[in-house]
Image 1 (cartoon, one colour):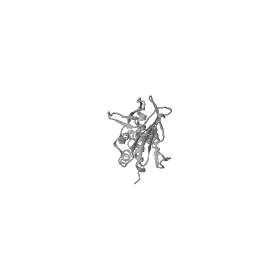
Image 2: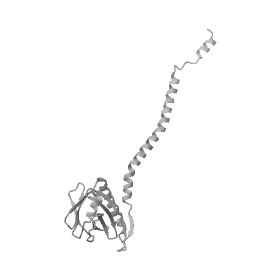
Image 3: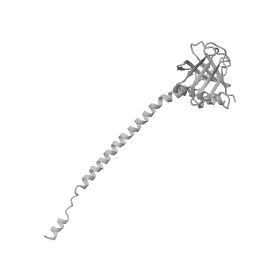
Image 4: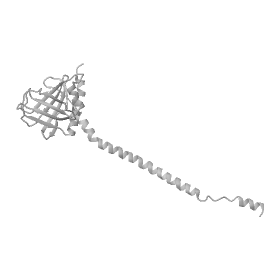
Length: 215
């Protein structure tokens, strides 16, 4: 064999033994995986976000509804006031409409047994029971004597919120027990949803009532 022939043989390229095709295959799979991951992952996150938002909508709407306070002028005192308006509470003890109003001087809880002839005077009272608390609060009717089922109990609107009123915002009311002029008791027991609604109503009014106080 001549020297020239030896050079030609030694210069032949060596085979790759299949390594390069395997690497290409692996890289192709990796790139395809990344494409799918980048396509699917954002969709999953978007779906999760939308699901959380849909679940939160009922709570958000209730919170907003209970804080939509009406701004009015009292026809008798001519004072500006804010009000939740009447909100119906349907319970086993009957249906009552509750309105919480605030002026520069007072915060008034108005409970009305609609289409009822219950009589209340200044000796009538309501016992407020709270969730998970043995302590009870008793309030006298501050409204006029009537037999239309109308009951009021009132707090002073001041820069420092009265402790009894603070409890309305800090705790849920489990029930309200009214004593009418005939000494009969009527207890209104609230559902969990109604407890939360009553608490939100009180919280909204107590917070906004501060803006009515004349400096």
